[in-house]
Length: 292
Length: 223
Image 1 (tube, chains in turn orange, blue):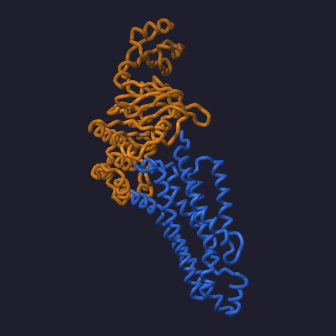
Image 2 (cartoon, one colour):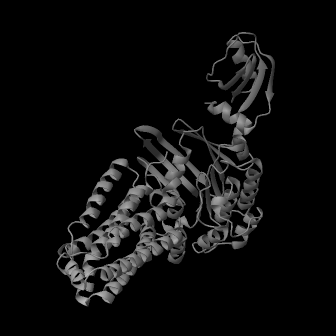
Image 3 (cartoon, helix red, strand yellow):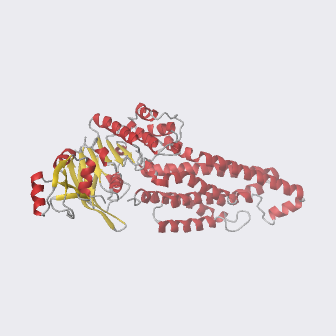
């Protein structure tokens, strides 16, 4: 059973196509990271999934319901973190807890205050007077205390320093470990997702590629070498991604070392010190999607 | 859950409502002092002549007050929701979205209603203190269009704040400005009383219109 199912999704914004025939699914119990460069439509996709935008065509199911018309009982099962950690800024911490606790039958006050008390702020502290990181803790507390079946996090890392990001990841790890929970997350700090997700969705120019993290990190490879002076490489069917700083070249490919060697030879390139280098998810992301 | 929603609306409105309450009390005090001064300064016949023959309305300070209050309360209630599209937080709550918006509007209209009742009671009480009850009660139908203009202004402002499309915003601004200004046409006691039933119909219609604007807000293009 899939927690999220998108079939043949098409969407346009101001006459420009955002997606054409987008299809993917997020199985229940998985942690799925949606990656894409800025402006590729990650937030738009989250907005469509939550019914805040109506797509031109296609079908989106969230926990089996049409995303365009999610019932209140289903919304109760979905924890949603809006881009920018949006919260009611006119409320205090205690008012936020009181407000949200009445909407969710499984609300766990202890979880909320466990997360919020780490900041050492009084319950009467106004959300408006908090830093982005502090606000993110309150929002995280709200969605965790709901005990949702599906978590949708739209760029949770926005504006957070390393400490708050790590805290977020710790909480998400514990949440997933509780079992049968699904997380759909977008983040512009790609590296963080390496510690969290089991499935990757790459969104690029309206097309989506879905792959298990493990498969991607083993099949996609990073090679480095020094080229002869003046030699310039181009992307092609073997070379998926390329970074060149002076004569030092980093390239990304799904091929093996031997395939690459013969391919480079065919191009008339004589690589010096060609070696496979350790690849982080961020490296892989740049290798696959490009820098801009 | 509706108690929770009302708590949220109260948190946004409380300071603005308190300030509005004090301003409305101040307006009533001004009416009282103005009438008292006229009676002290002028002969009784002159006051009577002004009231009966010239149709002088002694409660002029209330003329635009409900309208301004309606605009302020709408802004206080909905600006925090539309800035950064924070209303998506409310729209994700487990409640029918139309019902949720309707309850939010009801909370705003209730606060506006409390101020309207305050205006009517205080004005009637002040006029009854100084004038025969026929004249005092004649003030109520004269005040009602001004009060209704406050409700229309409130609902119009909510339309403008929630509406995602600029052409529609301009259209709503024109329509609600025209509708509000109708409530201030003419002068004298009960000038608009024959039109009052039609005016009172406008608020429920505008209320239903907000639900449609709310639907467009939910689906309003965020890339």
